[in-house]
Image (cartoon, rainbow, N blue to C red; front, side):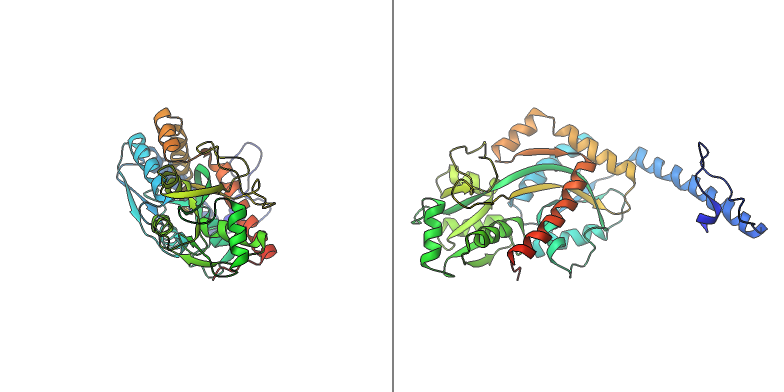
Length: 347
């Protein structure tokens, strides 16, 4: 009906389609639609103008102490000050972040329930056709905040003192060594699978419910190697509780420049980073999305927050709404191609 009633023309917002002979009833319906659109627009503007006027819930799909939890809480703390409302962090771990992602997708799209997620979300969307939500349509990427490599760690008593040593160990014991992850399909899982695929090696994948317990078992010697998130793995390395062999980025990591990259260590074509950012449910008013994005980008200009990021081993990477959307959807396509090419199995 609305297509019959309205069409854009020149500088006028709408006009009645004179090419279609309208009945009196149709004309009345058209007038009601036009009035509703005006009221709806005014209501949206009014809601956005007072947003936020109550606490905001930020859901994180990973355990407390994980890399994404650490970064998310730093952002929540400063963003709550900027918005002058509490931001309550709720950890709802499981299914590689999909439980929290599903809960946010099904929440009221009013800006009061948001998701802090990482590229495990894009990986899940790319590889899991049985997700309870539509990864491309049920959420809006709001703002990107970080893009940090993983750090490859082993126990301090491990014979592996380099990536070459680890490869030699894997060759000597095919399918016997273990590597950890914070869950099937998460970024650290894919970091390990990509490494094994490009080297043609095999190892036992042991998924945990977060990066912190995974790293703890590397410290304890129960796990042979782990591509940890920097906020989890770097402090352990700096504290001499684990041995670090390399980082997964294309360039060396400024927080540990002495560590080589995986590519430098001889694995051609290897590159993987962990990005993190805020998402909102589809249908959230554009004005609220813009406000959340602008406020987050503003707090990321703070020298104090930048310093906290550096201390946590996180590379700040501010992306506005358009840039973060491009990254998210491009990463979904990228992982579809990677899985198809490498035949990585996520079970």
